[in-house]
Length: 140
Image (cartoon, rainbow, N blue to C red):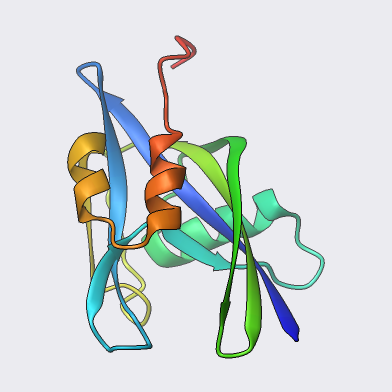
């Protein structure tokens, strides 16, 4: 079975003491419907997970003012004979920076409070990654 390594970002900012999260709307290839998702992409060549995540964030959103803080969750799933191994990271971003979407990948994006974002996400593994966001580290 083919294996695809991927990285995912729980991209957040803190505004007036509240965690807000960046969600992107992507088309699901299985049923051709659009779902709100966390940003995710594949690792290319000899990239590290952090290098791949920074590249994916820039390619899909144009965001450059980001800090990859730590790995928070790992999960796997199989789709069409490919085993996907996903590492999720906590990513601090500047929500005031303009977003330039990669229209071939993403239909739209939105910043929203964590509690609302949890209700919008479709996939349980993405919800679990978001549940692990706790920015109350006082380092922000």
